[in-house]
Length: 297
Ligand code: 13P
Image (cartoon, protein in one colour):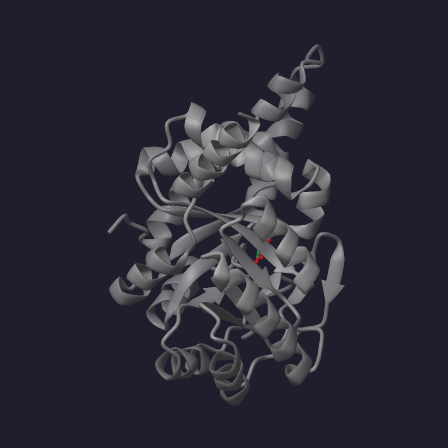
């Protein structure tokens, strides 16, 4: 009896979540981008699912290692996302994706918990070791119908309070990574950084186009918060099909919550405090989806 219940729960989750392959291939073909929005808690997850359902667009929910620890772990997050999708009657394609997983073990535990996609980020290692770890993840992930993103070069900036030095990807390294691993998407470091930009973002669009022409898989742009609209459009025209956003949401959410606490000295209900940021996040989602020209093909 117990066995039957467990199997049906796994089936339910598998049917609801998808990997990113179909959604990103359509985006690459039709020159738009699918948003990867990072989730940090239950509320943000709910706002993103509700708004993307309203807009009828596919979405990738990104979970960093830090956010995973904060929310309890991969099993908790998988249960939360699939539970919300069921309770909110979500019908759009939703991909549950590990953002910057640093090891095979971490990616494996996300896949075992029901995640449908992983980013293995072994970019702190030399290319040869990056490829070895990425290939191990691809072999395991593909057996479970899970998509894999990898990073070549090194994306700079600050994420989860960890800072990194930037190093741009070369076309040759991107080709080697693709040919030797069979990854499903690639994040080449080309000048974007995580967190708040110091000065004007400086992206190498020429190399982005060269990599896009040389590789049959979709490209990913990390650190999209703070990149002006015309550069986002240029990145999409240069072959970017998945765009990652986190900091822009954190900024507008924090502003709205700070305003609520400043204006209402009596408030103590956490639902009212946290919920004060809902509209700000939903407005930002509308703005990003319009800019990325995301659609449901
Ligand atoms: P931002 O926080 O700069 O938007 O970057 C998000 C990201 O790239 C997640 O991988």
